Image (cartoon, rainbow, N blue to C red; front, side, top):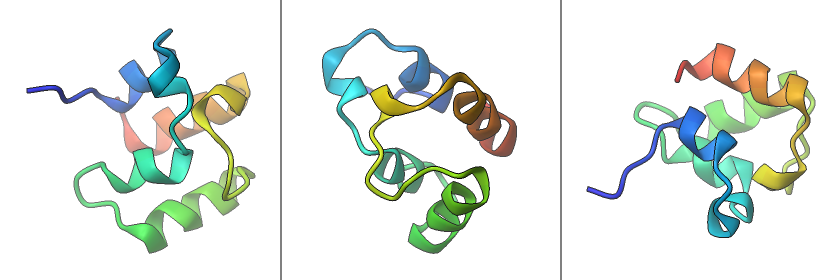
Length: 69
């Protein structure tokens, strides 16, 4: 179907996945809208314009902890 889990996107070596904005990835998850995505990003300390490739290890693990796999 072409769908990937959050964990798959965060661990992917695909250049297209790395270029995605974190906010867009989170908003694509079921039950997560703009408000919740931005709230969690702010809580974790992720800038609104951050892309997947720019995330640190602690930020990645915090996202996985918050949203599951």
